[in-house]
Image (cartoon, rainbow, N blue to C red; front, side):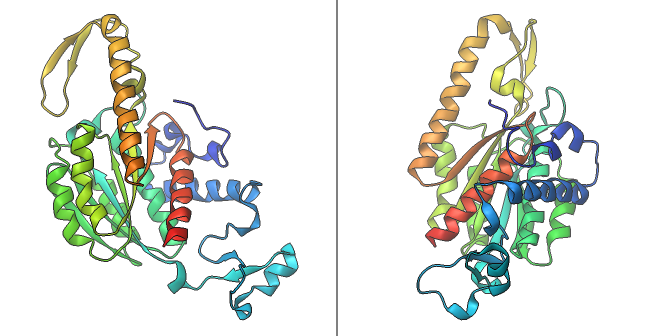
Length: 303
């Protein structure tokens, strides 16, 4: 996977550094504020990235809502966004099945996914969105309904998440559909240890309700590249089965298989207009934040 260290704020978000912070709120604040400062300096966003506060003026907007003080500073017209115009429900759907505990080195997939969830929750609070979360494995494990007051509850739930049981996307995602009658943004974070067709079938009930889906596929660097050299036994974290493997004979076959899996998911999610991003646990978190913000901007524009 290509490292996106040239993205704004990358130096703030190295997962190895983050793993030593130990406090999710401090971690999220460090990552998000560093990232946003980078965005403010980035020419492709310009002065308009005040998140929930402003958007560019377009013909037909009420001229009384133009921010004239901002115009005086930037010589460009921006319209004040009121909370009712922009805030939405953001729910983080976190896979905590047993395979998520895997870590070849550095942070586990679950830790990395929790960092992403904490950063999105912090960003949601900053944008005055209502934030909630659901953790799941073969069933729903914890549920925090979206609320403007639930940031700390979400962080606490993320902090307590443990990957202990095997997973099954269909059962919990089907049950989740009951919780999301009100349209919102759902961010699904998983390592997707199932066939692409099964994954799409499991996700469909959420999509049919009119929710906007953003999907993060979290994988360890070893899962992406299979950089093992010595013959040894590998354990299936979902079933506990031990499998003897000679890496040299398997590496090409494995890489072709993981590439085909990602390509199939990319195609299927694209067909269903679901934003899909692969995250490597050895890479900085800016890729996730940048992908989320780009997706959210597009989703809000479509509504």
